[in-house]
Length: 183
Image (cartoon, rainbow, N blue to C red; front, side, top):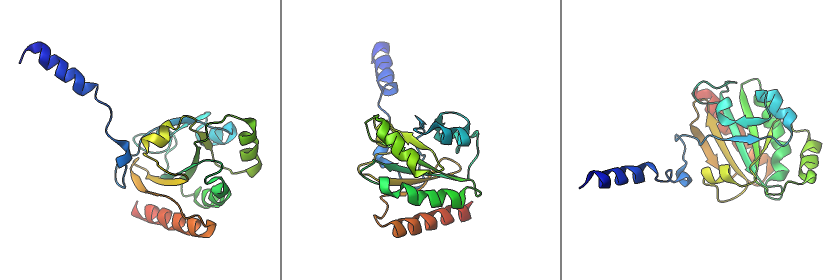
């Protein structure tokens, strides 16, 4: 094999696409991201900037160390009704240093979405993933979807939440309690 062939093979290995992210699983590394907040005030309160990066909160040397992050992927018509329920979760665990980040995957940029979210007075950041890049990194096939990330940046749990508000709150609460007790 010639030096040129070895060089070309090495280059092709380096240029290979990242591994399949649909294989995200509990215990695996959570894909990092940085997304703009729809209501920039909530992001400013949490990380003192208008974009929120997962590694601002968890992982190696986070700016604002957290014990975990609950990621709630949704579209307005698919999971938007549960945002208010997560407000309770956010308030309950704020002192425990567990944060809620909602990630909207709707592609529209209308003011109606911003107004609607502002009217909910959520108290936690809602981030915009217009092009579904982050949703693709997490391998999401359906909305809504929940991912809980631990303080090290590892996926603690993930899945489609129950459609009932009370069942979802119960499931989220038990997952968060398990996370906090494991640390």
